[in-house]
Image (cartoon, rainbow, N blue to C red):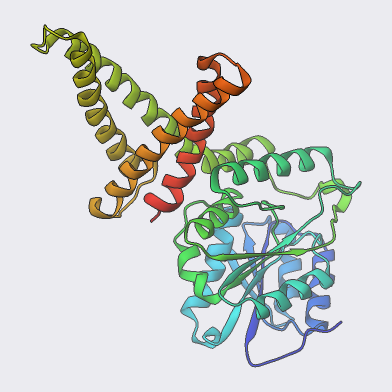
Amino acid sequence: MLLELDKEKIIIMIPALNPSHQFIKYIDELIDNNFRNIIVINDGSATEFNTIFEAIKEKNIIVIEHEKNLGKGKAIKSGLEYLQSNDAYNDCLGVITVDSDGQHLLKDVINVANSLKENKDSLILGCRDFESNNVPPKSKFGNKTTSNFFKLLYGVKISDTQTGLRGISKNLFNQLINLEGDRFEYETNMLIDCILKKVNIVEVQIETVYMNNNKETHFRPFKDSVLIYWRILNSFFKYSLVSVISCIIDLTLFQILLLTLPIKNSKTILIVISTVIARVISSLVNYTLNKKVSFNSKNNVKNTILKYYALCIIQIIVSSTLVSILCNFIGIPEILVKIVVDTIIFIVNYRVQRLFIFNR
């Protein structure tokens, strides 16, 4: 199945580090199937691989050179920067990023290209089936774990978070060039950024191929996994830390007010006033730290604070209602029910604040 040529160009972008000689054959297959606009980024390959890149250049393929290995993310950004600076690509529809190890079959590249044509202004993901028998256990476990974290924290189910076969619409170039991350975590940053900016994400099922049991991968299991999970979880960690700080402030102020407020006649009034004052101050601290630290939001206070306090009121109503209902009908001790209910609300609040209140 040949890709139909049209006026809108689709560029194939391939980051490459120490590719095998099969890479040349793969380039030939792309060219034979009408992918004529190909950019290869030599990301600091060893000198013994120069003959491979010279052979590719002879096929009129553009090769961008990194003097040293800078990482897959940096390679993709270098390719996007080249396209943005070259007027010859002004009419391109977008790019398809492809790995250099031959794991992305030609038919799947074509399917992603066709999806990119049908879904303009979108991010297309070529997603593998991790239930198939030929998937290495560590790859299956890693992807499922990452996918579940995405669903839990961002409310979006992505079946293949680490796929290297992606279709990127041209209008996303500037957005992705400025993303943080230079190695494999860049692909995770890409997903998070597109989710937060409500970019349409389309999944295309592709065949699951692991060449030589994935021995040619340059993924560093520990270092790159830490970078990826830190990127996914860092705002949640900050959000959790801010919550702990706010709780300490609330309890400390409450105790101080109980001891210092000049209210002697009514213990109830003293507790109510101390609770309200402590909660107002601690909530303002929580709001400010979440805005500036957890979510790094540039939205002004006017657009966020009313939403924030509306969420606080809803949280109180939902928590008290659910705890009351579950205790009355199930008979579970109040403290256990409250811990479970408030933990769920805590995670839901994170998603609401991340996506709707402090979303940049």
